[in-house]
Length: 587
Image (tube, rainbow, N blue to C red; front, side):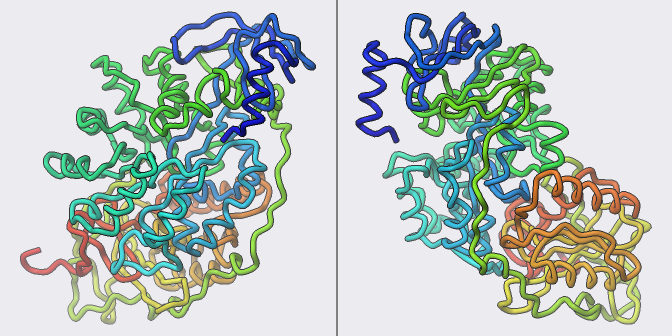
């Protein structure tokens, strides 16, 4: 928040009594309030905008904007920082050159591993970064009590405390089961947020009709799980904003915006988010800038696309007094670009300081300083021998449930398959693209292993595994055989978290993520090179998915239909219960 002395400085400057710190001359000001573009000079004092039309004001420093368009910094309305694999201290150099200056983050991943201490550790450098982090306070840690094992939790008292922090802008995504079953703990979290004037983020995957109406009655303000225009429209009609998502495995933008363009849908309650996106794709494809440019390609007018990335988001989260426009009193987060038909930020200013010059990040990153215990979060009580992965059955053939993946989505379909049983163990069937899937408890609590089968990876040989497994973050491993699954799990424990891929009993590639088993403090370029290397190994083994380690991280999610696998077993998501991996009569 702005202090009294800062406010007075702004007023004095606006009155012409003291000079501006900086004036950016010769720019075309993109005014997201009026939807107009007008020549201007942006005046800045104390890192905040005094006026976008400051031609008559004296300034201590002047920069020539060279006729470029000046836009507000872009806002990612829902992201799990952990899914970038990059610690917040190093993320600036990846997202800020793309024009993203605001991340609305739900740090539920680190909280599920290490509770409130982990939550605080992840955010320790927040004030020193070259982008803003506002908090969507994690509402469900654990996500599915009684259906999974986590390393940490946030109770009602913890959540209520964090909601009072000035950087907390909302209650983070709350899945429908908590609301439709009218669980007091979660309804009280909603009440705590609304009492403070903060919104509550939704996660209404798969919900329609009366269930969706009931969910909206629970106090949820938005949804980022819409996969097509019809779902998006149903939310908008109930007064819920839609956070259009385009992550590594959640590609929803085109289907939604094609409908928006076709039907001429009012767009003021549409905005953008990445949710989960790996660093290699951010580097190659883009971030919120990619979504803006894709929207323009699909027929959204450029001004409207920019508004979706800026003021729409700021208004929805009630932070428009801080960010989202080039207006007096807002932080001076400014993008300069040559073209509005395809926006490429050439220069980026954050709080009035230039941090990107000619597309290159020139800002500074704070030093990483994480507690030692956060590097020691992987302890396997089981999963180190092939027998641990046996799904036993008495017979020659077993009918089992299979999680059938959707390309470019995190939702899946529940199908069944007859699989061969050898020496009492149900086998994978790589010829039919059916792999064994296991979740191995890694928090050192009980040694649980959940086992089922999955279709869609395309592996002909070997196994791949991750210690990122939403939202419990146990080790999840998919493989053609038990020996390679063991090799992956052991490698991840040795690294204290990360990705691993193996074949013929040998580990072929790894990516170490030792901070909570989720993040690396290595340079961004090294992480990307490492990720590209293990992705290539996966493809060499027959794999067909573009982002296999992002995909595998979501199969264990017990809140996205039809099924999810946790260390406790297979979860029927819509009914929110554990079910057998075997298809029983009458199922």
